[in-house]
Length: 346
Image (cartoon, rainbow, N blue to C red):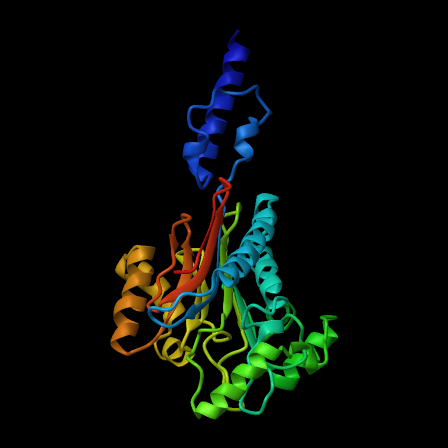
């Protein structure tokens, strides 16, 4: 009888230990003690969160055609489901972020990879970055023209080199050495983006920044680790060699397990000047702001005062989400361990 009582006590103490370490202890509270050495099936339930964006911009008062909205929302749901499966299977936040961004890079709908906009020289120059909140390691590439999936090149820089940012031919040489898929620059051509360049040239002004869909993802995995990534083709008709915030760690991308993971979209120059992604984390760490307070203050107060347009997505270490933007629209979506999926444009 004494032995049986000790077994029950050990199991009970084990369940308390689990509740203290899980990300959502409410999911296991009230579960009766189990036989020693065995784990209740409900203990496999872990909290994870995935958030994606596909750019901010648009024109006030104008709505996208219904058919186009359905195209975007349909693709974003596919992306969320794919990334969600990675996390629900116990995969890392890094894997989920890379999976989501690769899918968006392969779609001509977004300004990243296949759908990248053209520079003033009629070329597609791509930027991307990724960061691991657990180790604070990061990788980025900028100005690449032959790497099919820049986000994977960014991750390779993080994991397989001693550097953080590689550009142009050096990044492409490194990506080829790592066995990543290299394509002819013509792969990135789409008629829609080419026509946009001609229109921008005719108007002798650059297209409104951010309106074409820079993409990004942030995630909290079942291990409690955060990650963030961003990928873009930049601005239509941009100057040769121009680089925005997307590959700049701390400006367009940042992740830290102590605070949050952030991916930005919008007019990159403002995001660089204000170190936006890191500023969200810093306000949480040093000022004690909540994720929502920090993100909203930066996007809707600080940037607005400077006429900086754009938005960001973020998730903190507790699974809270923020998605503020100061433009007419921002393509965005979320999925959680509970199976809740949501996609929004306006």
